Length: 271
Image 1 (tube, rainbow, N blue to C red):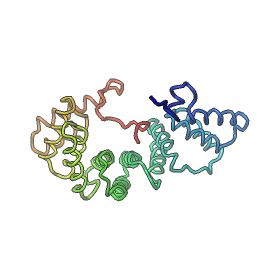
Image 2: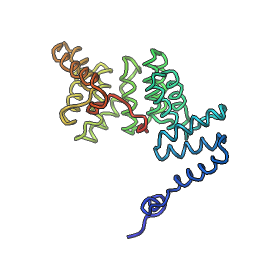
Image 3: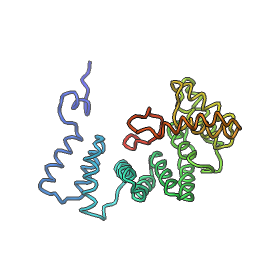
Image 4: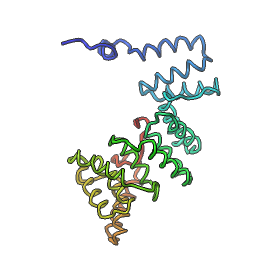
């Protein structure tokens, strides 16, 4: 069997990978040039490639202090998302919003950056900004057939009523994703929520119940919330209350005890 080359060869042999080696060299240089802002920024990027968030953010912050004129680039999107996430967890929502807006504004933005940008705008009560962000997402990803991108679009557009004017296109594309994965709940969660926002209540209930059945018969917290609203719209008040109570109980549970019901977005994994 042929021996692996490149990065895998470094891993299997116990030798440092090229990125790890670059970090070592940069660290040695920084011992001699501790105020080299550009080198701190470059090392932050390398740490980010290794998913070493604390070290990456420390270097990113140090670079900004040493040279406030440094402007993040496309390759710094993950750093901005991490920094924004840290700010949001501290309740510093304006700082988080600024970082998310910058990450979303690159020429080749991650759709997850647009999602958290829209989410924080909504949290801040900036309804107009939220709707503008959703409209921008619609324009930037108008032609995508990538079901993972469609999931992020749907997650943003269902956060509030009338986030976008038309849902027909994304409904069609999500229906295709569901048809292509008949044994998966993955795209049914999003499709059910989109159908509800589009006013197609019966179809929404059907897709959300399918998602729950395929998702170990439990579903996500978001499924329960949308079913509560959909059943209430149908006049099924007792059933709506059941789903709402179930969702509230899960939401109020300490985060470390939750079942992964889709309550939070892990920005260190959003890509």
